[in-house]
Image 1 (cartoon, rainbow, N blue to C red):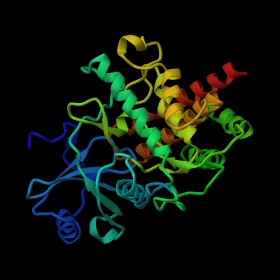
Image 2 (tube, rainbow, N blue to C red):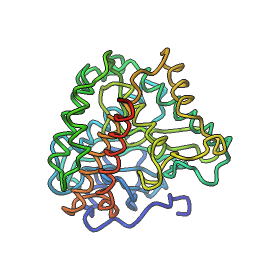
Image 3 (cartoon, rainbow, N blue to C red):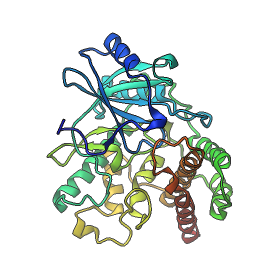
Image 4 (cartoon, rainbow, N blue to C red):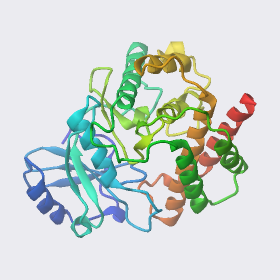
Length: 354
C-alpha cells in the first residue's frame, strides 16, 4: 500500500456508504474488477466527495459522488463530469483519466457517482512547487498552458458535446448563476461583491466565443507525471460547460494576483518569477494566444475580475455548507473570509482600470 497518495484518510463519518453494494456494482459494471475492495477518502473534494478504491487485484480507481444533505440547485452534477471526461477520453488528445462507469441509482451508495482510472502522479497543490527545479517549473507551466489550449481547440460538436451547455452569452449566464448562488449562501454583507454584481453585467466585452470550459482550471486540478515536467491528466470537471474560453484563462491566471492567504497556497503576487522559473503573466497569455490562433487576449482585466467574482461566490457556498455541516472537507469553514478577499481584489482591478 506504499504507493498510495499521501492525502488519503479513512472515510469520514458524514460520507460513509455501503461498501458491499459498491463492490457488487463494480463487479457488474467495471471491466477488470476483482473483489474485495478497500476504500479511503481524499482530503479536499470540497464539492463532490472523492474516494480512492483498490480492488483485490491491486487495480486502483477514483470514485466521485454527490455529497449528502440539502444541495444548492444545479450543483454537484456528477453525470456531467462523467460525460465530458468520456467525450474527451474517447475523441481528443486532452489528457483525462479513463472513465469506467456512471451510476445514477441512489440505492447503491446513497447518491449518484462515477468511477474512473486512478493515475499515479503528482498533484501540486502548492503553486510555488517546492522541491521542483526552476527549469521544471517552467516546463510544467508550459504544459498546463498547452493542455488548456488543446481543450479550447476541441470542436465540441464533433465530440458529442454540442448540447453540453448553451452556446453564447456564457458570461451573462455565469454572472446570473453565481450572483444567485452567492445570495443563497450569503452569511454577511460584502460591499465589493454587491459592487461587482452590478458592474460586471454592465461591462461585458464585445465579441463572444463558445468552447468547452473546464471551469476550475488550475495547477492543483491536474496530475503531473511522476518524474517528468508535464501534465498527464486534468481532474475536477464539475464546473465544466460550454463557455467563453477567456473566462477559463482568467481563472487559470488568478494565481499571478494571489498573495499569501489566497487559495490553498497563495500565489505569485510579489514573487520574483524569473527566479522561480515561472513565465510572466504576459508571457503565459502570449503562449496561449499562439496556441489558439489569437493575435492577443483582449479585455484582460474584465476576465480576471469576472473570475475572481465567480470564485468568491463559489468559496462562499463552500463556507455556507461547512457551517451547515454538509461540506466534504473539514477545512471548508476556513473559506469564509476568502470570499471577501477575492471580491475586494477583483474590485481593485476594476478601479485601477478606471
